[in-house]
Image 1 (tube, rainbow, N blue to C red):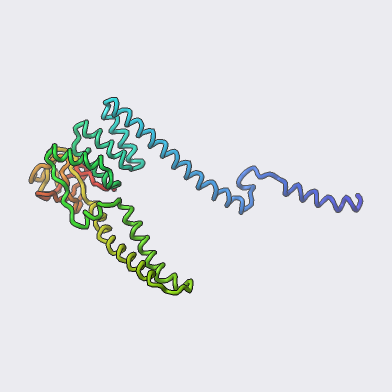
Image 2: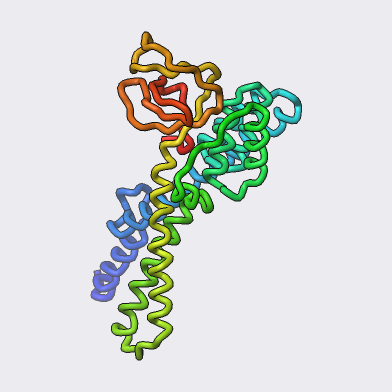
Length: 276
């Protein structure tokens, strides 16, 4: 073997080893496996989200078609499944319409209230609730002033308002010193305004928290018992769609307070405005 061949052979072997194609993840170098995992996980999550969204869309369309065909039971089932997968005010409003056509007043009122919980600007759900309560002589929920304030905007909006105003206050106080800006009057004015918005949003946050305990009776003639037992004496009977506030739990029974009385009902007899 000549000296020239001995010099070239290691170079040829080196190119062959570097040119080998990885056929499995184990053949990849460490940085390659990390890159593959980092790319595959978001892609997998994106595909799952797209698949769930497509399923929800199909269920919603099936519900609309069944509703227009006068098949209200399948429509209610489709809307209920779509709302369970991806809660939306439009889906819940349609669910309430289907339940109302089936004569399920409690389920209809609950669905419309949940639609307003997600989107207080839903005029259709608000109009339906007003009509249903006028037709069935149902009371509206008794809300405290901070709960009324919390119902002006969707619950998530209050969180964004509080977070944004807090960071604005911190930024207006700290950034001029960090960036060596000359402190101006408008810095203090913006910080004061943001602090005021933050303080005003606190009662609304409290209202959102307390309103999660608001529920509606699902079945007509639901007995309100003195004790948390099936043999307990019935204080009164509640109408479907009647508002109640859940106070505490004992086993499968909930102690609730309505606009006119208090007592125990079974857990499945009350639907909460914010499903847990």
